[in-house]
Length: 229
Image (cartoon, rainbow, N blue to C red):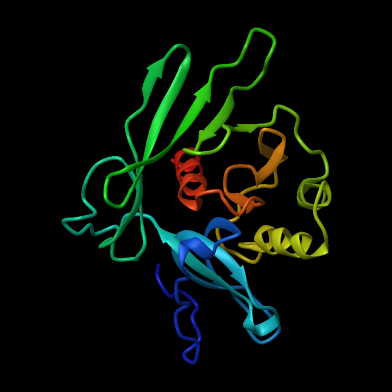
């Protein structure tokens, strides 16, 4: 329920531009519980970004699921995300899947319906246990999910090629929902690379850390949306 447990002097957390996102998680927690706030402040389930610290810590929304009471523009079928909670401005959408030579492909479209990339699920090979995922962004090498999982959770996720700043960032994402919001159980970390370059890391399918500035955030959102559906 929107605004649950909100203090009277705490306004709703405003959304931030999706283009500014470097880390995000799917959840409904707006403000975590602190010494002066016994319970977390919950809002709409959305794609959220950690920001600030202490009593100023918030999880700002950057992309929204279709509203429960859809408007004319948000009532279309399929997987879609919006820039606003009311569902007036489409951010991105996923086409229905196509089966092509053992791959399941979904084209990702922007708010105007133009294709911006592709999400591909590759069936596991004879000796593989899991399928692999690939993201195609025009102008760049394909982004491939690693078959090897990092064993150390969020800390190793960052330390394998990053520093303390990013460690703090991903830990903030991991903390989202820890006091009562939507927090998935901890899972292993997956690395995404394009021609050897580390582009993104993800924990489960709800927590993501962007590593490459050129990655279109809407493609990361689309993958997260697909896995969350």
